[in-house]
Amino acid sequence: MSSGGFHVHGPHDHELEHARSGHAEHDAHGDDAGKRMTNQIALFTALIATVGALFAYMGGATQANAGMYKNNAAIKKTEAANQWNYFQAKSTKQSLAEVSRDLTTSAADREKYQAKIDRYEKEKSEIKTVAEALEAQSRDWDKQSDQQMHLHHRWAQATTVLQVSIALAAIALLTRRKWLQWGMVGTGAVGLFIGLAAVLHV
Image (cartoon, rainbow, N blue to C red):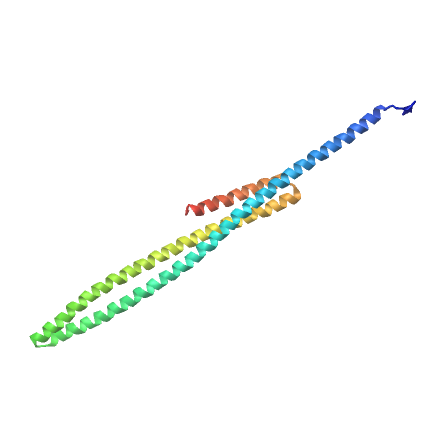
């Protein structure tokens, strides 16, 4: 109420002003908390997306390596098979030479066939060594291919989990649910752990 140019506040006026100022402070506090949460989620999403991109690249690289190593294994296996075919051809010639030696009555011819037999035996030994080495290389390439595929699966698992974490972050940003924030952090940690397992070749 007013009197002589002065404004006199009643008790209810003070309560209304206090309520208005309290709501303003609460709204300001809520806005600050909301901005802080938004910034945290945005930063988390950016970091996880970056790590996820690296994991995806590693997954693609290991898959390509696995295919290349498997191809190398097939090449070495084919080369080994060719060597064994060559070995078999030498064995056949050696057997024919042995039969010819046993059937001949000439000492000179026996010596000639025996020389061939000795030569074939030596060549077979050399061919066998090469064939076994090629087979060992093929097995080694196969093993490396399997290891790369295992790592590829690890990187793929880590990437998938990080994508789930990013999805949870988006939902948390829209709903502002605290438990979703914890969910995105926990899922992101699991994805990073799987990625670490891939780095350590586990």
